[in-house]
Image (cartoon, rainbow, N blue to C red; front, side, top):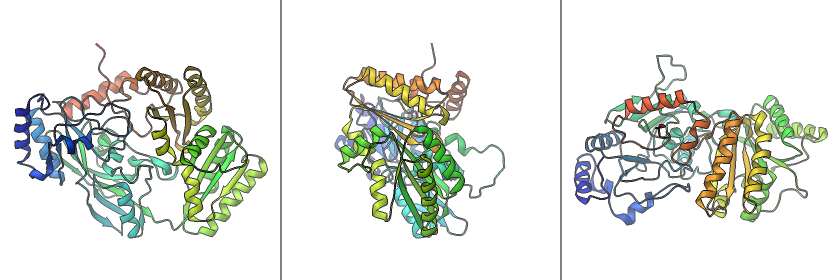
Length: 472
């Protein structure tokens, strides 16, 4: 492999070759400017790359990969750098291919309800453009103002509204992908029903850029909701939360979010963000609810009726129903305190595991007890999307690297025992790859390696990510 870090002449040759595909302004070698590409939001090691390329078109992405294959130059692809698995952090002598300038919304089909957008479009900007045309893209994440839709697809992001709309895998109709050898694979399907052989797009959704670089996407839209109702509930137990989610999913088709927060998470988030505690008394479990529909009065009446009945039976201990958009934002602030918590608990260990709902309560209790016993001076916080089994765990601050690693072993081993997934939506990256065996069999890992070897035989693209080393 080409080592552009130790050999300036090699870097100069690569830069000259890349200028055949890009303009000079699209190539950055200045360490002061390249430092912005040293890493994502994770605690993985950061490194300033020797070169950053900024292609503006899908064809330019493909050409950059072709040139890098020709020179044996390893590449790491970067989107909005909001990941928590270290997958976008440059390693060794890798250069960066940034999709930040691949940021056009190309077509909006207001008849069929689809949008064709380039991979570097910011999620929040896409949502705003779509809504201005009377449609709705339902993916919603705390990093909405920075993350890019290509990265959302590459990690199969889910976010807050999976309970109703599904993950990115359900929202992507078609893809265009630049392959490591320079081919541009265009699969920009625009219809929901398409049974024409193997659906190749699913090879690249969730593959974290290891098989190819997503350049354009056709996304499925929904009718624009015009009414939203939000409520924060205090519950006596996790069992009550499972009963409530079943009841509300049955009775309220417009239910779009069911965010679960254990007491420590809500209380710590409120403290760090300077928020007033929502209820006079403390409760073990809190749930943030949202419905999206078209008739605000009808939505509110239906939600209040169901929550009133739940109060009478004791399924819910207390409830606040937002009476305005400002009220709703204040209630969501408890759930979205995660950004401030990450900064407060650095260095942290953060997890987004998938746990079967039937095993989740026991998982939280056993993992919480073990972490409290081993690390009594740290905070261990639990929250998640109960409707899809996505549980987040945040532990910190851990000043010693071996402490962080021990927390990872505890959480991932417990995840494997529960029959869960070690990554529900942030991906494997470099942080989790040694634990992938807890979720994937030897046979699955072998097939993944075969696919990688087939599509990227030189191993230039996002190397050393996702797949653990084969046993020797």
